[in-house]
Amino acid sequence: MDAKTSRYNAVNGTTKTKVTAIPGDGIGPEVVRAVQRILAAAGAQIDWEEAEAGAEVFKRGIASGAPQETLDSIARNGIVLKGPLETPVGYGEKSANVTLRKFFELYGNIRPVRELPGIRTPFSGRGIDMVIVRENVEDLYTGIEHMQTAGAAQCLKLITEPGSERILRLAAALTLAEGRHKLTCATKANIMKFTEGMMKRVFERIMPDYPAIEPSHMIIDNCAHQMVIAPEQFDVVVATNMNGDIISDLAAGLVGGLGVAPSSNIGDHAAMFEAVHGSAPQIAGKDLANPTALLLSAVMMLRHIGDFAAAEKVEQALLVTLEEGKNLTGDIAPKGTGVGTTAYTDQVIANLGRTSGYASRDYKALTLAEWPKGVWHRAPTERLVMGLDVFIESGALPAELAASLQAAAEGTGFGLKMIENRGVQVWPALSGQPFLVDLFRCRFLLDGPADSAEPAIAKLMAAIGAKHHWMHVEKLQRFDGKDGYTKAQGEN
Ligand code: NAP
Image (cartoon, rainbow, N blue to C red; front, side, top):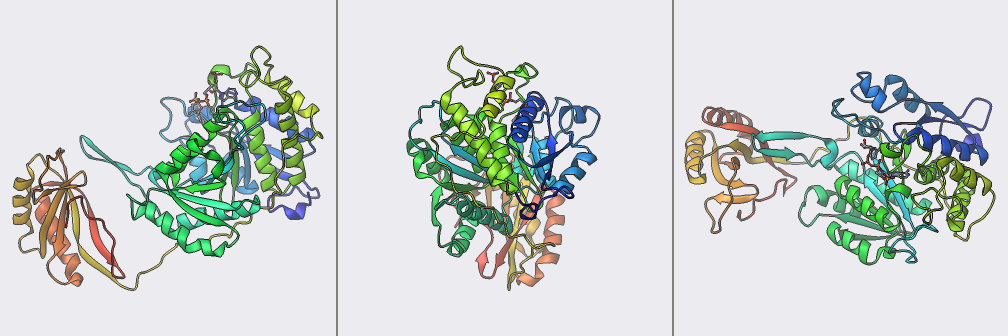
């Protein structure tokens, strides 16, 4: 590799790339060492910078699980090979993995799913070869949760237009870089029209920029079904965070499970490569761990930094080892023939330079358009405030609550339009038998002109607050003639 081809931290005067290595917890140090040995034997030009994260760091009282020196190392090098990290019970609320993903805005989680030789599954022989691209920082994983009442919890599903656009463009760039042709966007846009629908709309808007790619949209539940029925139809699949989390594990299960599943977490300024499995504490320190998943992650890393030759050499040696089935770790070896991590690593090293019967792809560098700095903001030409949804805790029946709220709204400029409970209108009453809990969404519409909204809101909230517990308020806005809010089930 020419140092100039790498956008990462080349070591002065050499063609080496500096990479932050985080051994992590449990089997992490064993699999990281095994991979480092194989990469060195393959001649990969890497200068490792070791950094700490995980259980021991939490125990020292660092609540993020990653000390400043580790964050500095990642910021400097922009590339990380990471072992699994544990959050010990009783230390910190947040996982160190999530901290690293969010801190470095690693918005794209890439999970290749390919049938491997010698790993028998009920799907063997079907030619499964796909990549799942999962949005990695938005959606329900923003971690914004609130107890609304003592017995009702809420989690915010946040999907943004730029967040959707950059993951979709990453998925498209990856499709081209790997010489693939089909990109499926899987969403639940039929139910969540604004959030999941955002991903679908942006997909439809940007795909004409990629004429070499055949785009398709699939409802996520059908996508899960199709993945089991006919997994060979998929090439690249892109999804929002939660849906992507589920289908990427499902897809990994088709080709041998999490133990052999690699992944990368890609951002504009850093990329982190890791196995999908955890720290497997039961087998830690016993020379039993299988380093395959981390090795495949390291192959992704070599391609990411532009060292295609080393990536190919390591991948072929691994495929030959799996094909021949000699000296495999116990989890994948034929019964009674398993060896330890060290012997398996030695076998892969012995196979360096050999070529498997497995066709290689013609990988190209993944080029990402850097997102402009600063706050993304697109002001609408017209914005109207139409009303207010007020979330109220109450043990009263809907008719009683409505009477109280109508009285409170009098003279404020707002009128009560409807009350719903868990998405279903309960006042004015509809037929049916609603199941009621103590959290009501009460919709008020502005009677007067939209520009009088702010003083009217202050009046309405003061009147409601004098009589009721309210938790939060959502403005009902119309952007450029389009309502920015949904109707309750049954609402006209
Ligand atoms: P796990 O560590 O993936 O282990 C589950 C089981 O899978 C192990 O007991 C072992 O089975 C097998 N296994 C996993 N990786 C293996 C490997 N490389 N070689 C051989 N066998 C392997 O899942 P977990 O027990 O749910 O999680 C343990 C800890 O890891 C937790 O603290 C969790 O939070 C953390 N975790 C971290 C990450 C990450 O850092 N990205 C991801 C997931 C979990 P046998 O016992 O049958 O040998």
